Length: 113
Length: 207
Image 1 (tube, each protein chain N blue to C red):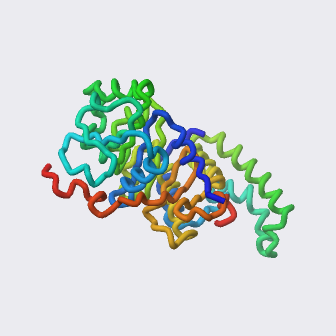
Image 2: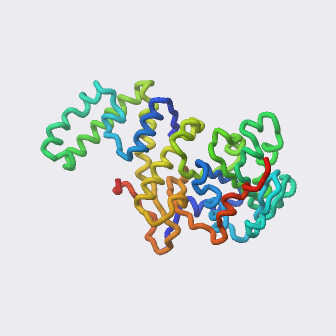
Image 3: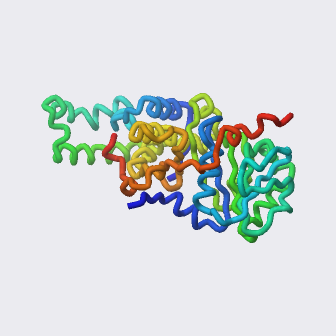
């Protein structure tokens, strides 16, 4: 994936890196008006604490894919989308401590966040 | 079971190439680089390439050379703070660096450099051979002046080094290195001879 950057994405990336808080997809990907269109339906499920339900997660995945396709088609949005893509890649980062040779193999840390 | 790192395994198998340790000052670049070299290539001849004269005996097994022509086949060459020797964008004015880097694959030479910012580093180091970047922590202020091409990966490095530091609080923060190509965050054990003198090798040098 080619990654380009600009001041706005740098600011977002630095903010995220400093805060260690993953942005929700509606902030990372969507413009505010698009966010309502793609993610507003989640609100009642969140309110009921059902946002981690597999069906809701599945629907959210579809919404994110549609959002991504929409965002990629807008040139001014490409930088932020590619950054978000690189963050998604971060789920495959492994942390390996070679200073303690008895540690288990490098573990995937996607679930540590 | 011994932990395995994709990045370290790859580097161990490198016959030639370039390893770039980048990060802000006093984040453990040199220490991790020399430790990595000791771990991956204990038998290969090791050289320090520098135009300054200093006591290289504090680096056991290393030989100080001032010219690339003095570096033999199959060697590991370390250039500390590379922009002192090869200035940023210098290869556009001098062709010797490009000429040397283009044949290190023939000579089976690994060039290992430390730098505080890739913006201060001649891009020829990244263009010609298999270059593996080893990110150490970089302060946010320094990050703003990093080359745009490398800013996202360096930002990821800061992020994952922070995560790793929280996950393993008993490991020295400066041991953590992030290899963007392999998406690997690795704590490299410090080589046993490393001391305060090694990390301040230029203290007595007059510049």
